[in-house]
Length: 300
Image 1 (tube, rainbow, N blue to C red):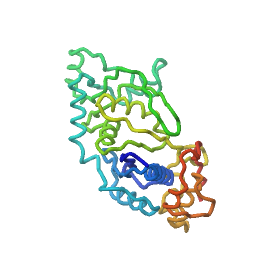
Image 2: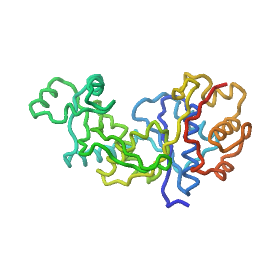
Image 3: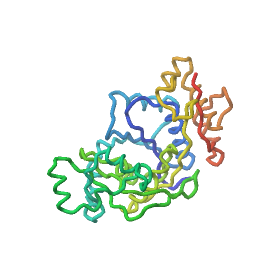
Image 4: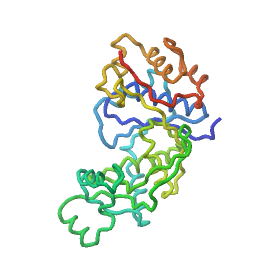
């Protein structure tokens, strides 16, 4: 059994969950429950929030048989914790102001010398005069981490030891909103989350987050980055791919148990047409036998 830690699922309330999201949530629940951990629900509502989305998301998660421990945590209620962590990094000299627009960053990052999508350090070594001139222009600065490594290694239950690039990630955006990478690190530590199960599209962000945790003196969780759900064209499943939400499936005559069975079959935990309960899935669950390739959902 586990060591008293916790796993979690942390959706952004920007719309309804699709089957790929529900599948990842089911996996996060199975990983946590099978190791004796608590399972926590955190709503990442610092950015895009669509009215009613959170309520529908939580209802859909419960409908497929997932339960969670304690109250649902909202990032929008945790701003003081992010500010305190940022203050710690600022005081340690590990930050700098960045005045770049998104377009400037994209153009610099696609230059031949820069790794794709990584911040090239444009504002890292501005002089005091240059910084003041940028401030005087009226552009509010973001706060970036002054990283002193270029890569970091994490342990992943499915990928093994993984070393990925670390750059000067944004900690607070120019509009004053805490950035995702800072918030997720602070929240996981504050909630006792020591197991992070999420889509493998986020594997590349794990080294940055683990490095940031280490700078803050926070424990680094064990990761499990699971294969995504893709559409028939090989792209990541999205709402535009047709009947991909629980409500869509209900319109096709598939009830919640049937959908759970479809998700379970995609993980090798059920035969086609079978609809085992979450308790039965927990009994069958073995991380070592999980598929290591994406699930292609062909729709109705």
